[in-house]
Image 1 (cartoon, rainbow, N blue to C red):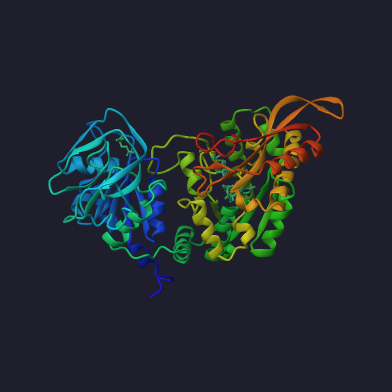
Image 2: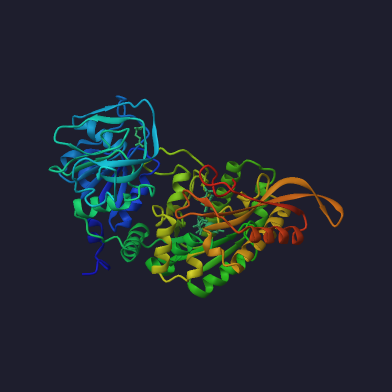
Length: 531
Ligand SMILES: Nc1ncnc2c1ncn2[C@@H]1O[C@H](COP(=O)(O)OP(=O)(O)OP(=O)(O)O)[C@@H](O)[C@H]1O
Ligand SMILES: O=c1[nH]c(=O)c2[nH+]cn([C@@H]3O[C@H](COP(=O)(O)O)[C@@H](O)[C@H]3O)c2[nH]1
Ligand SMILES: NC(=O)CC[C@H](N)C(=O)O
Ligand SMILES: [Mg+2]
């Protein structure tokens, strides 16, 4: 039987609970679980026993985390985890706390082990069966993994056996198969652990017995039901940018609540060339939804005048967006909700995650940049999804390909691509340079081979010589990256001839620019945007 079109209660019946101990990668665990077709949720480690029982998971995963089990105040898993009778998988910190809580011993390591390691199988185990994909000199099965820890388990809890070791960790994996407890010191959720995805799939599908019911079709059914439940008969205002995320939310809400939806597109003067008209055209053509366009260039530029600090710029833009949304809402009847295309990276980088203790990297305008007091309640159906998952939904919802596969464009727009103070003069120069770069990428069939590409305006001047005359002009940096989830990225190896062509066109055609550089930083350490 097809797993699509199941009733909502059935989509969720086969579910996994992930307890978050503050790891950088908790969301990646969630992604891997969902990629294997199983619904999951993340809750903080300090949920109550009752909450664990009520959740009704078919299996529980304990994430990694920055704390140490050897610290008496280190976080622990609720007892209900080990009393629920369902399979449990501990990852890194999760393994360490499992060991300590079940009667084993963890000691503080003297040096951290970070990065690549090889695990050798020391006993058969259902979690890895057949997944150790090559052999060492003595014919013992090996697994390539990625580690990030200081502490280690040095005494097994009663009932457990060691199932894998590395050169530096004698207990790199352990299991008590009679109770369905499994634990690994390495991180199966990161792509560098080559068989990691299969290990997690093995855990949720075979060991926990979950069926693959979390398909794009079912996610849509589920989101539609959730939105209807959330907003009832209220009217909803969607901040629509024409970008992938808000377009997908638009299509979803249109299906869920029909004409209770009105969209507002804000032209803040920091959009790319021709973008405003293009967005309005596309939406009139493809979506049949009501879109109001608000021209607010002067308002945004005035508010940004003199401001050079990236975080303060983001907050100003976030606040103005909401002011505009609220003003538009007040002109309409019965609007109680503001819908946004917020996705998970926006949340985690703004440290807005409900469960984690991650650092603020930058305040995305739609999360950390929101004002503290808002009259409208938020409706964000994509808040827990990654970009590639959102794209799959877009395709399933029937949005045109060129919309679903557009490069993302940040809400603050050129406001975070003009370093320091934003002025109309800088925005106009940047728009011209950016258009040339993107045009050439499309012409050379490179647009789809990069995940995001754009120009950045640097408000520093350098000396140039043009037509025998001295120039003292601004600088443009080109940025192009390849990434799947926008959490990490690699700079695109664009051909030199191509870069040469773009740089020449920019200097020739954009009066005011006489130097072009190419950004060759990855993320980390550099973020994708410059501010
Ligand atoms: N110009 C705008 N007008 C109205 N709402 C906007 C605008 N720019 C951004 N938003 C709101 O902020 C949200 C977050 O912006 P973000 O750029 O992350 O998403 P997006 O524009 O929908 O998709 P993409 O990541 O592909 O650009 C949007 O989903 C939308 O709700
Ligand atoms: O809507 C947005 N509002 C923001 O404030 C914002 N800041 C960054 N981005 C986009 O997020 C992705 C990751 O960007 P960074 O590596 O620069 O954090 C990239 O795709 C960025 O373009 C934003 N999107
Ligand atoms: N990545 C982790 O979960 C690390 C666990 C623990 N903080 C350690 O250093 O060993
Ligand atoms: Mg956008």
